[in-house]
Length: 255
Ligand code: ADP
Ligand code: MG
Ligand code: MG
Image 1: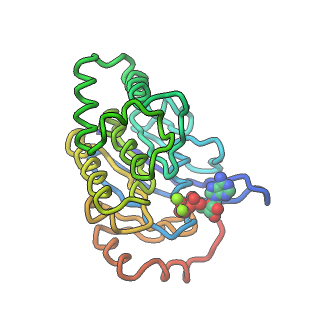
Image 2: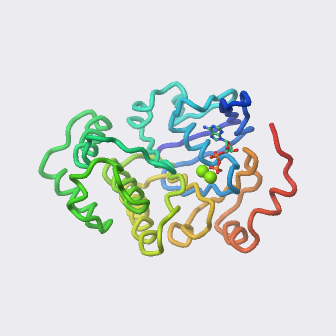
């Protein structure tokens, strides 16, 4: 049982205009086995939250804490976060020239587990996971994210998720740019990971579409860097019908 706790999180980013506050006091608790949807209008700070949990150097935490089972996540390097059980799938995954999918997965697995996986069972696991995600076996020999289509990038993220078996996964707009068939395949992958390892999921999305396939236990609406409303799956349904206008019209901007 793992718990990711975010308390009173304030985050700024450096821009040409100076230091800009983006997150203005976010509180959130994600436990293994729970699925939390973070929803909100564009620019509300959803990706900033994901990047901050991931440890991206562009984002500065000015106040508040992030802990995993009581350990200070903000004091950990990016690698240490992964070893501690955090998995981050970014909205815009980066290319890794010269590193194949196969080698990347094996290196990541070795780094996280502290030992290389046994070749036979690992090869079998990779093949099975790729097949589940309807990925062409040839894909394994390609360089990570180089020339990948939007859908291939997302499948590769879920392939990592299924093989690396983290405790808590942060998925930033894993649904963006996917057609319905790909969305179903990717969602099934997340649901398999939830079943297999009791994964906790922080599912960041602008649209309610993916929530038809991955049912959230909790929905949090992020507006202007703050959680403006929280509820169960019914809140996502309401957002599907009403959109975000009611929040953007009533919530003042700024810290
Ligand atoms: P969302 O993912 O909800 O669309 P983001 O977290 O990407 O929102 O962005 C929130 C706000 O912070 C936006 O106004 C965006 O322009 C700004 N922002 C985020 N990251 C950066 C950055 N690296 N440099 C400058 N501005 C940024
Ligand atoms: Mg956005
Ligand atoms: Mg975003």
